[in-house]
Image (cartoon, rainbow, N blue to C red; front, top):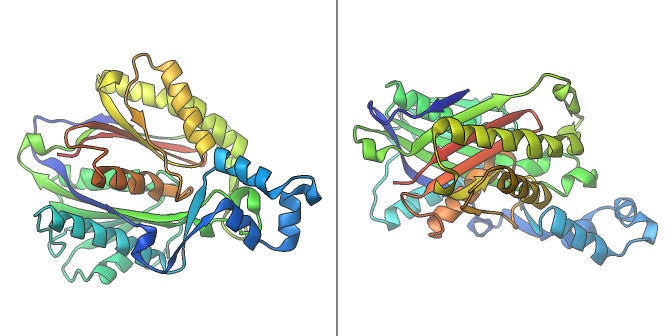
Length: 350
């Protein structure tokens, strides 16, 4: 599904505010280096990692830092509490810029999570957590690591159709719960994070924040069998997922730019899902090899880990608030989940 945003016909959709969780928000957060993580594992698991003493701890840590990430964030509270920290930062940073934003008149709250309560939804919990007492509808979306971008597409669609005028999207993931901690080949990937985005209706075409949306799912040709539910979390074929990323995701990014009639050199920032440093760096390499004239900067996170559908939005918010991404600059976001789905969005902050 590809849609180029119509900038000639109102209503238009504006990103009014964005926020993210930070480990400094609460003592409920804990940031662990890969060495600290290995040392906290049971003796028998640690022996397996070190191959019974054949490898030195420093060797394993160096490899994990290079291939996966240097540090990961763990959150000890509930997933909606994690989401609330991103909402608080969204409101606080807006206020510091002289913007008074209220959530009392939102028409909808959309939750995005793969690690949420299921029922009641994350969105229901968020409505209660932030104290919204109006008639805003609540619902969740889930589509592996593309859930956050799917939620943003849903919010955009509701505003563009005229059904809603103001929508809060909250994406919160305790991705460290997706695997058994002793399954170190998977558990050394994940981290916990959240982000929030407030979208609003506008009659001014210059306020439009979005350029295009491109979403697809690939459950066929046996792909769906490579991911399955386990007793705790899920199991996936990492090699299959990696190949999906460096082939299919690259093709879809190229197709998106072609259909949107956007020159590759227009893009200033690439903010992608952060599964591992190996995957994201490979993706950058293949994109630059296959798309002529591709400029811009690829951004990486080294202190969260794979936060599932929250990883791209958490990084996007950090980059915007620290001034790396400036108003008017073209940002390409790309999320991809479990070798099955892709969500690509072209956007600007105004």
